[in-house]
Amino acid sequence: MRKRAILITGVVGEIGQALIEALAGQNDRQLVTLDLKPLPAGGHPKVIHVVGDIMDDVLLSRLITEYEIGTIYHLAALLSTRSEFTPELAHRVNVDGTLGLLRLAAEQSQWQGQSVRFIFPSSIAAYGLPSLATKARDNRVAEWEWNNPTTMYGCNKLYCELLGSYYSHNYKQLAAEQPVMLDFRAVRFPGLISAFTVPSGGTSDYGPEMLHAAAQGKAYECFVRPDTRIPFMAMPDAVTALLELAAAPAAKLTRSVYNVTSFSLSAAEIRDLVLRAFPEAEITYSPHSKRQAIVDSWPADLNDSAARRDWGWAPAYDAERAFGEYLVPNIRRRYGA
Image: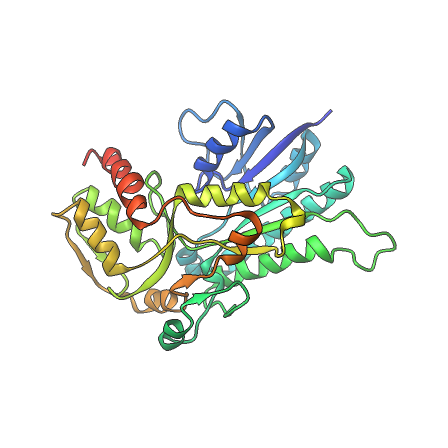
């Protein structure tokens, strides 16, 4: 008999390690993780880790013969800056990889006779505001506004949101017998800041890069202007958002895609918070025109009222607590600063 399991893809990335710890502590189901890389040294006793590619159909088929997968957290993705250098590869990984997993989840839902829950981290990159004047005017943007992404990563995320909604509501809609649908739920994240993982190619990474450089005593040139403002979130809140959305009763959800956010800061305000903790830090600005244009197209804040209403979303970390209690102390310990 197949063992009930939770599948997590892209688990070696920024969110994955924290998600493992949270799920391992609150769930008796087997955790099966998939990534191109092995887990960090030591792994986790409650995890079966598979080194492999989400594009490998044979591997995915083997997994579903061994496990009855009830929930999928699909974290695997090629991030925003890297995606601009290899847009075709980004499309294959971010779209084709997601499509394969959605198809697997849809088939599993039919075979099991109950919906497989598919949890998808989307991104602020799904937005694309046309000008700084529009960004200033439409300060707090809702899920359905300005869905005109300017990056391949943003296009990928937005399209995958639509694919997830299709597989949840309209898959095989012309079939004689309506199949059991999967249960797709997406979170649109702002910029994420982690104390435990090094920034790895996101266009919002100037925030965490400032902190990590300061703690190591390294000079840092910020690639956006001081006045550049977007929303951010501490990594523990990001994990909480995924878990809370996954646990929410389906009857209470009015959307497939939800904004979540915590605090909105300019690059200058982040610099001030870093200098408060590391007064000797050398942080200057050298805007990169193309990366600057991408960040300028993202909203200054996100309207997350639907998440607060439907499933009780409320971040635990505002800017002061995120830096004072989570980021600075842990990054100090990481580098012995």
